[in-house]
Length: 416
Image (cartoon, rainbow, N blue to C red):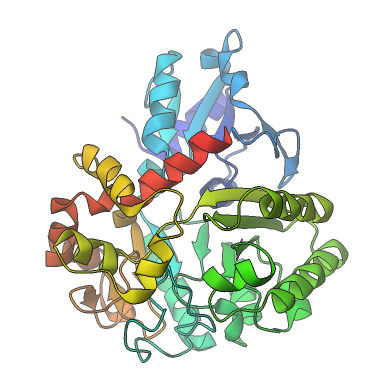
């Protein structure tokens, strides 16, 4: 198969319309990289009915039914650009007659690695489903990345991975705690990279400056309303959250209406139905995307320890009692597909102190640290250390590497 860029140039020259399957952060990042290389894109394909018919980055979002139109295989070329469902979508395309390398490609062929840059090693909450619920030393990477360091990180990413068009500026920390966040986003824009940020909106940051820096996507998380919210967004304030939601909605409309806002509603036993519906209506009023998703114990440190016979920490036990899909059921489904690849291995996780984690889904640095300084470690060495780490081997042994994908799939099945 010829190189992806040459293939896309050839398809465009033949008059085939190039579509990106997936209007999420990966799809938008692929668009950025393609535009940077002079490749014209006709539109996005996405199965989310709430965004079909909208315009994103000047391009239409259409539903998957377009793939079934007469002559689609001859007139279209599809780039699959989703994180968890690349395999499933590729199989669907092939069932329709699309051929890999001829009428579709996976974005991971062009961009084997995604990047997460933890600009804040600090969080202001201690949610019971998260490892920051006071179960690990608070000093772990408890620092802010500086602007000059961030610039060096971006330059190295672009030098080693020229097809990267988007990065996420979060994982375990709250990025709005870093006062340099708007300047970081501006610098990434200068380098032609989109930025996705996530926030619990419990910190009264300079949201106007943040909007003026024009992040490409803001992901919000919520788990119920009032006292229910504060159970699982532990240490948070519902009043602070909802007040800041309104501020974001107003500033977005005024300054940066193109910014996507994705609100992820974490479903627990105590916050479904009426409260879910009310938050959904809030999203409709503010034109936010609403994503109800089943909550799960997000720290794979705790999940792997549980598989090895150790008890869950007290906070994680409280979270488990509230789950709609129990930990054992999630693990049962994960083990059933343990022979499949690990999605998280595609992500290069750069921490605020410049250390590099073998896996973005493990919090505790013990066994997870594979480089002390990202800037001084070539990408090929980082990748080699990921797959050979003892942590990675233990995780795969128990099928835990498929655990997060299982919950993502359950969410998709429920929604669509």
